[in-house]
Each structure stands twice: as C-alpha cells, then as structure tokens.
Image 1 (spheres, rainbow, N blue to C red):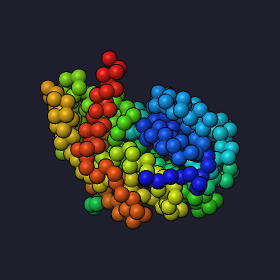
Image 2 (tube, rainbow, N blue to C red):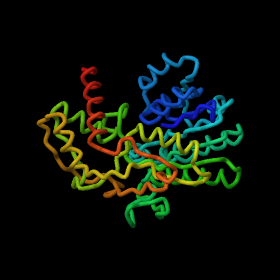
Image 3 (tube, rainbow, N blue to C red):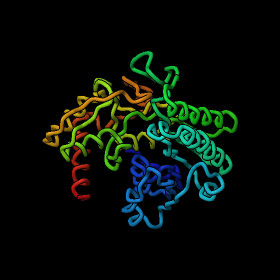
Image 4 (tube, helix red, strand yellow):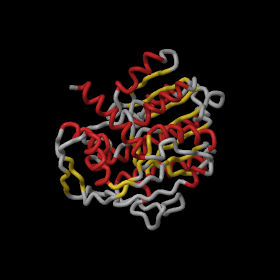
Length: 323
C-alpha cells in the first residue's frame, strides 16, 4: 500500500525476528531499503528471517543484540535514517520478571533514542501499547484518553513513550508513537506466551481443550499484521512529530466468540474451559482510530472472519509441517 523507497535508504527494525518485526522487515526489503534486524532472539525466531536472508543477501543484516546493551547497539547505526522500534518485553515477561520488563521497555528504548540523536536519524517509530490507557473511562478510546496503566507492562511501555517525547522536546528527534492492541496473522508464536489466535488454533487442531481466562466476554480489537505493517509505513511518511496513534482496526470480538470461530474452522472436538482472570488483564477494548484514518489509512482486513480464516490456514499448514 505504501512504499518508503525514495524517502529512506537504511532502516533498523528492533525485534526484527519477531512476529510484527519480521513482517515489517520483509515489506521494507521489498521496498528496496537496506535493513538491519536487531533481535536478542529471546522471543524472535531466526526462522522468521530465513527466507529473507536468502532472498535479500545484500540488503539484510541480521544482528543478535540486546537493546539494553548500548555499546553493542551503536555499531549498527551507521547510515541509518529510520528506526522502527518493535522490540519489547511482553506482558508475559512482566508477570515473571518486572525488572527485566522495565529494563527492556524503558532503558532499551532510551538507548535507541539516544543513538538515533547521535547518528542524525530522520524518523523514529516507537511502538507502544493500548495497555497504557488501563481500563477505559470512555468508548471508543481515542488518543486523548488519560493514560493510567493497570499492569507493570503498561507502566514500562508508558515510560518508553515518555522518553520518546522527551527526546522530541529536548533534541528535536522526529518520533511518532504507535499504540498496538491485538495484532494477529502469519508468523505469530502459537506457544503459551504467543498470541491468543495461535494458542487457540493449536489447541483446536490437536483436539485439546481451550482455556479462557475470565468469563470470555472480554472484548478485543484484532488488527491484521499486514495492516499493522502498512500503518508503520504510513506513519513513517506522515506521522506528526511527538504524536501517538492507535494502531487498531476498530473490530470488536469477544474471546468466547473467537474460540467458537476457531473450533468451527478446525471442525474440532475441543471444549472451552474457564479459569481465573490474568493479573492486569483489561476486560474491554473499544478502540477509536479516526486519527489514523484522517491520514488516509484504509484497512485491507476490515472483515475479521476473512483474516481469521487466512491466519488459521497458515497455522494449520505450519503445525502439519512440524509433525
């Protein structure tokens, strides 16, 4: 939908071996950019870049590096004119190790911002999360909503946002912020620390029972990864300095409804079981995206059933190949 060729020449993608990161790396390479993927492989997977590494030998540099290590990071900023900061410590990490969560999402972000200033980077796309809002006070939740995170993860991601804005104010760095919600699509991890669609798909395909934390009535706003990639590229071209944008389709699906849909797609005998709520889990998402649409963005995946079926088929093929 959007091309960055002619606007930027060399990009860093942190978390480049991850779910969204690897899809973004592929798109940027197809645009003709030089791309440096930076990932510590704690969650990202080398296999997500294997085909790209073979296809774009001269264009793609794959680096194993922790973003909390500024001395190693600085080696890879030469000639970089845009940074897509996708790397983060996920919600699952913050529950087990909140200090590590803070180090990655706050200190790691600070390192990247500082190096971007020192190397005259033109544009910095900082990926944040809808968790910075906490439980919504009104719907649809737009970018003017107060930020009041209810989880360690939300707090650490908000700290990253605050650092990003500080670098804009103090150093003039052109930073725009994207708040992700529930991204889905090919390459998302289907393990217990992965995305809910991948987890449910694996359970349904193997006939295991599906566990829902809470009542199942909680609402999520699912956005296809291909739309998310194009939103990143649009914001690279048109995102206002210091501004945050909700990166969400606006589609609303309950977790119970999602489980039913996946069981039906699989023709599965899986039974839905319910357990206690996860700590810090937000009950309801109704996300406004008018700010994004005013920039001219149109969602390619505005029918959730179409995107879900496509994604389910990808999981089915992958899981069959893994047997």
